[in-house]
Length: 510
Image 1 (cartoon, rainbow, N blue to C red):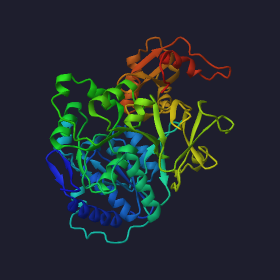
Image 2 (cartoon, rainbow, N blue to C red; image 1 turned 120 degrees about the vertical axis):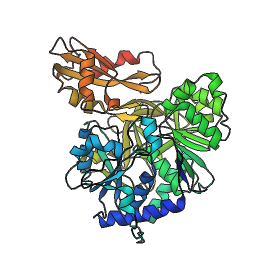
Image 3 (cartoon, rainbow, N blue to C red; image 1 turned 135 degrees about the vertical axis):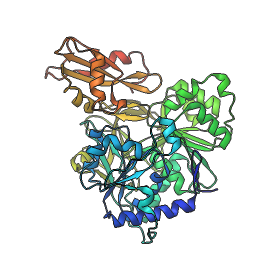
């Protein structure tokens, strides 16, 4: 049926989702949530994620997803920074952060569904702490919210910066025209029809990330049927495509790599001819993997370049990807790209500079409580993601490197400064440098080079320490102990000298 969201054996109809969303809006309102407030979503992909996001829109609040891989320290930072009044959280995710949730935050617990519990090997039992309430009880028997929705605030995604502290991208309220234009941009960029009632979509990536979040909510808004994959598994995705005749999905390059690693006889078991539009982004895709996927699935694979701040900037088709290896495409929907040198002057085709973007009718934003950081990324109305690249003679964009040190591993943004800040506190560490190195599966992985004061300190000791303070995906896979790190005259670590040998002979630097 049109508009259904399906997870395992559970089905949420459009009618039930609409009712639950309106009841949730009433519940949020009666809990003190109003204009510009934040509701934190500490959830895996599940029905309440869609319902709570929609409810926030109805009362003029910001839905604020939090990466559930975070430690209590990291999660609490975001809860405090966004001044969350309510957190909606899966039951198995609550115990590790319960004691760190700020006083006064209402905890609304969603029982972890069986299919998610099985996928992650967690306990689905609910132990409701004092003062918390179940999601079903929170919205039960509420009078549905019927007020006209205010200007949309959308989702406030937290994305880190070179300082290592996550920053909330807080968009200005959007009136009906601005919301329609933004929605149209999302539909066009992601290849999801505005009337999505005929599509069957797989959600493979976590909706705490900006692109899967925008993709999933857009597909739901358009009436598409959405199948939630509890946890990405390559062969299971092929089974879903075959059995459910899926037509659309958003993926990251790591998923392509894992699909291609399946034995040929496994890949041959499944029919993927139903696919119409598969789009990927969030990280560089190995050219060989892209070519092999197009040969396997056909010219249904698209790629985009963008960011939480700028949205979708370019799109590249399968045909363009094969003819212009490495391009991330041409600007879409009236977007304009400039390549600027360090003095802010335009560079000619083929010369590498910082990539700046202008989008028509762009809804402005600031970083939550950090207006100065927002101003630093703009020149004459053009905004930068901090990427370095060039335009060819046909106006196609190619990326070369990042001006800052951000690492994208498996589609996840990781910021070395945040890790270095923790690592320098490790007993026995004198100084450190963290950066990205090539990884065949994830595009990049993390490496840390350290100077030590304790000769008995081993790489595994460092990793163990970091795991106590950071999410697992932020812990460097490679830890190297150096006698002395190279330094500039100022004494600052010359990170580029350590990083360059890892990338020698590579056609890219990200």
